[in-house]
Length: 228
Image 1 (cartoon, rainbow, N blue to C red):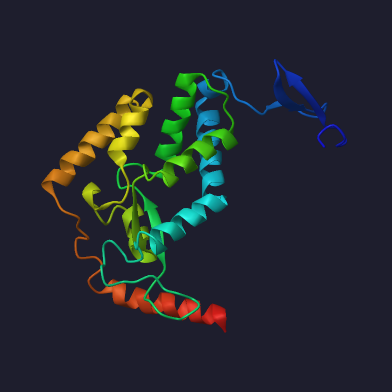
Image 2 (tube, rainbow, N blue to C red):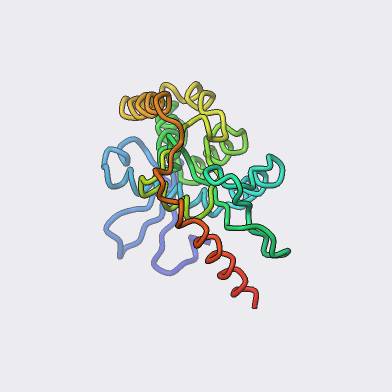
């Protein structure tokens, strides 16, 4: 298809697919090389692109459904009595979402897997790396926490501390597999979080004492409004 698009040139360089145009200042290379990742902005944009692919993939949504339906992680890990809201039956309390962590974010996971590809000198594209990240989810080596939407927001704001032992997923297995691709920065992140977890249990510091009941009602009202 690329060969027939106007002003678009499809070709191969060293057997790697490339898209070019007389109107463009640069080529789009399907598989990235080491030189491409020496530019920090390119590196970050690539990892973010992988992250977007993972989140929009059907396997990702099926994994969340698997955690809720098969593993029975359909309750908020912070507020134990808050159950996933079911649009069909109208039962439940709030939307339950999957939070990556508490140690590694999805961006961290994608970056580490990318570093592993670079280390192994494998072909690299956003699709190949995203596929590997999705495999790690399905093998339960990505640590996640199921939480209500309001709790999820509070975690990202740094208002809630989640002990790593409270999460689902074999983070030890992930670290063991990718140990050679984990930078010193990530090693420090792991060690610091584990040290904090040894000293402190999960804590919401009292911010949800009054706020959560109102939030639950708000979510249910929103969902009912969508169905009407």
